Image 1 (cartoon, helix red, strand yellow):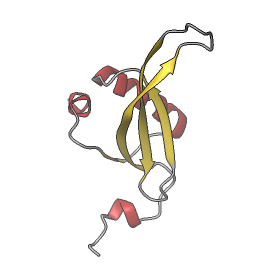
Image 2 (cartoon, rainbow, N blue to C red; image 1 turned 60 degrees about the vertical axis):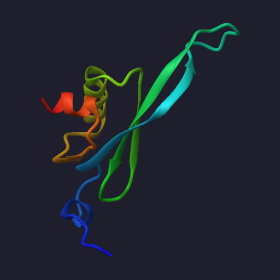
Image 3 (spheres, rainbow, N blue to C red; image 1 turned 180 degrees about the vertical axis):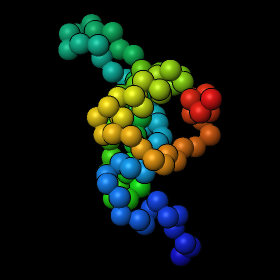
Length: 97
């Protein structure tokens, strides 16, 4: 087994070091009525690197502004992160700028 990065093995508070990714689209109804309109929704998954706790945020689109809003909701609930690991998605690259 290879060496793990230091944020994965150092004891820190929960969600100090985070990995972020999006889950595939889900069809969500606007209300419980019979002919309610459905639309696509995505789940932004925040994973704590130290203890593997998760925080889920529902997002309506895969844009940079939607990701920044999800990150804002996460930070207001869990506090600021010191280390964030993401993949090379276009919404993440736009948010980095």
